[in-house]
Image (cartoon, rainbow, N blue to C red; front, side, top):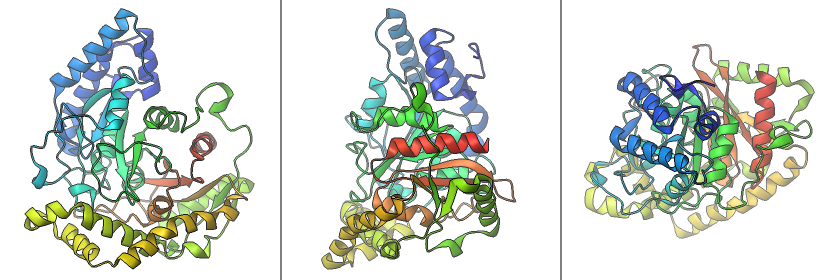
Length: 436
């Protein structure tokens, strides 16, 4: 265990919480280390849209006073966390990545922020989001190479964890906005099953698809914060005792999906090498035919709901929206009620179509992204390899296990049936153990 000092930012969330709880170092020391790290690297990465060091230290000192008083401590006591800037915070602005909401100050915390505070977490600041959590990029750069995108829309959250500024961060996903930036930035991204985390106080984009996810450095840390955020008893505990690893070898199915042709050659080779290394633990299965239309259905649902939920922005400031978002809203306004309802009904149907496949496996292994983070900052990359699983609301997780030929991270995505989140996390722990 590290003593109090400048390197505490290198510790994961569980190690930080344990050290603070045991008195090895203070919450203030942990926060100061993260602030020092931010000062060192954020000029290059630009992960934060709001950061008040005084407010962060004030929270840390209060956490240390609580510990000294002998009061009960939460699971994340003293642990710094970054919050995507579409999630309301009562003591910080929430501007949703748009000039139309500049200076917006919520009057209360979002449900997830309230849960984090109750668990003792230190809310470090607000991380950069793309414009209204859609496709127009923010200012954040990829920590591995600033000439490459960090992904989106939770770009700042992924980059902040990847650059060692905080051990944990919270984001959201409506298409690929947790898994994609986590894969590009080389961290663990975990999106629990649809509905397990309360979305009150979070920007309403597409309620049928909006889901909250987390960023961490290990599956264990991702589980730790997810357990804090999920509704009571929704995510079975898996960190204690023998439950830290699966009781049997997970059954893994490699599923390419119907968009395999979008994969970069080096990414295909890397995944093939991983499958070969896992040997008989992996079988290859085909995606159900009933899921082939998902990419169109997801777009229909998302754009129709974006048009409805961003109507106020459209009416009062469409000229200040990006062309990308204006186009989405225009397409959404043209979608018929019949087409929208038909697409919405496919969510349950596609989940049902996967039931026979899951009878033969515990988790699906599939690409997280088509390749490494693209060069350039005018795009956040292709979310297509996340679309199917987000549409279905299945829990998904990406692990930074591979590299492209350019040296940048390549994510490996694992997916499980809805509400089998603990099963997914155990399989992730097993895969990390095998590969590393």
